[in-house]
Image 1 (tube, rainbow, N blue to C red):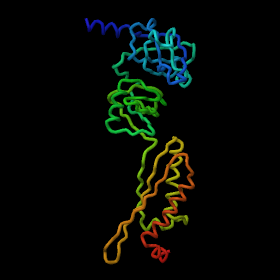
Image 2: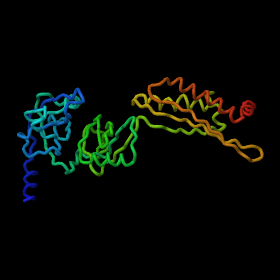
Image 3: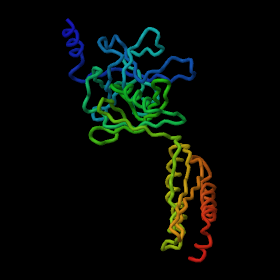
Image 4: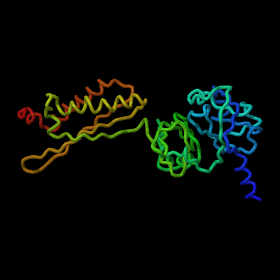
Length: 298
């Protein structure tokens, strides 16, 4: 009996794409609103579909196909579509018409759809500490789910993140896709503490062919690239630049020196950060007692 019911559930799904009516539903405006699902389907139109099933939809015969988690409409839902309803931001983002017609396929949850299976997913989180166990729970929670770019994810223990990048098995960027047990999930923090170790060797006080100190070259080019990238991503990293060096004396003894310079990267004054590094660059040389040596050398 169980095998017969399962077979009947699979067989009801159309072999040839059909066309249904779709509308857009708004996102909640207050925290008291019910959770808004990305795709709601009418059980009258799809009597065998379950909330865990995936809906593949496309508006043009030669256009892109998208896949979403389906939610079976209940009597308490505010969204009551004739056939399908998609969240308004998703409809606009993916070019799905409001009060229009779309083609569809319904895929049974748990059965991997090759064309939508993702190779890896990049997730970004901010102002949140995630342990290894948290990362594992998020990975497990996402298995078997359809995701899309810029999706706001809320997982176990109210872990918040944003899905930024989807890459298919063909190594192509995707807009939507399915996370399987083989999908690799990459976690990126936008509010990390970064320790940057700089070895302050004698070359740091040497000049390049353009007459620029190697230290200034590092500050003006290398650091600037990171700062502009982080600002673009709205990141607020805390950077600890650690100057370290070893001075060897004539009697073959040595002494190690360290200097920690803390900065915040994000929407900050980049020039002020550069000045701070250069100021500590000068004082670090004095703290080592090597100022007179470099003066003689130069």
